Length: 178
Image 1 (cartoon, rainbow, N blue to C red):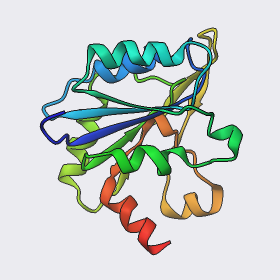
Image 2: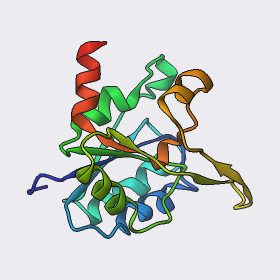
Image 3: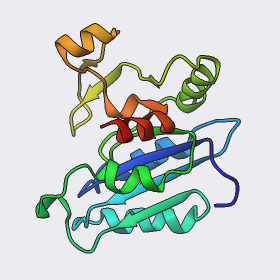
């Protein structure tokens, strides 16, 4: 990876072999006027997920940075893999997240979100509604709503990880304050 990316796509996965290709393809189809990187954290998958990631990593060595574990971290009680592994590896100004069993369908997702954030410094995070489908591809429902700060505090978050894009420096500031 030569040029510093504007966006770091973070993906955590464990035993997502049936889904990980579609997830990665959703990243690769992004049409942007900026550089991005893909950071995939595989938590010692045992179902072939690791082999699929390595296949893509070999094909896109300047785009995909994979983190592999020799032991499953979750089973050892380790939580917050994004915070422990993915975010520290991120070089972008922005972070977009998508877990290994989710995928993006809009090839302009990153471009739209970054364009908005670049024009509106008063916003730290953007997200969208998502379609929820089961493992057989059956549409279940829409997930998400328009939130205000008050509704997030009183009703909880309805933000799907796969739809987010946020400023990395806000996350780092948050860590220092907390």
